[in-house]
Image 1: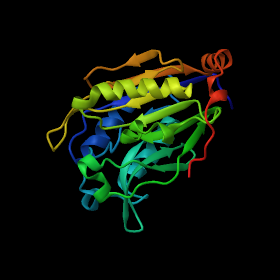
Image 2 (image 1 turned 45 degrees about the vertical axis):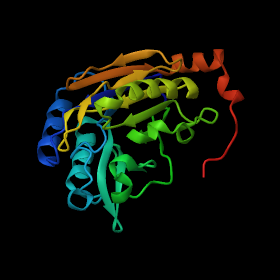
Image 3 (image 1 turned 90 degrees about the vertical axis):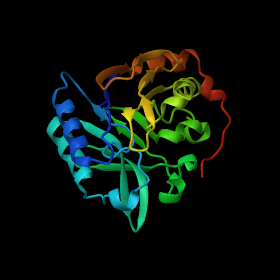
Length: 260
């Protein structure tokens, strides 16, 4: 059923390096404490391990403990749970974003742009297809971290989607790019954009300042976290989006092309 409003719960954690048990426990406690409506609970990139290149040791299959936890959590709290995990399939490793619904349906998006600067391309296989998920009449384009730097991959051709959701482990030295590019993706695609990051330090010594954010279809900042652990529910409204697109029909003038 279509709804004008979408309730998004953003979890910005301090991920404990490569400790799935501790991380899943902290998420369970945070989700259980949420008050009020929630349609989607969003966890960051590689939320159970941190941004690790030790794929062979840490990877799970699609029936592994973290995926099982996501499915159980979606059922228990009657919401969608999403975030990325290290997944093994047919001998290949993926940085895979899962869209887990309470009815047991799971959508998958494998990260397209692997972060070669950190060697991600040497350990993981890149994805080939986008996933535009749907909930309550909203269309949501899900992306992972480094994808943010590549606007063609996110291009909204017509009104394909209403929200881009980026999950990330985006480090402190490039936080300006994080904030700026999230806002730019909202402006150029006339959509809402939500970016979900982490805080703290990882096992490689990289620091993260969080700054999870939500921007509106005119690029207006709706909400932005600081560098603390956060569990925050935000509400966005479809009527606002429709009004902006009607008043400023910029998408009609966009170049036409096909993503292969």
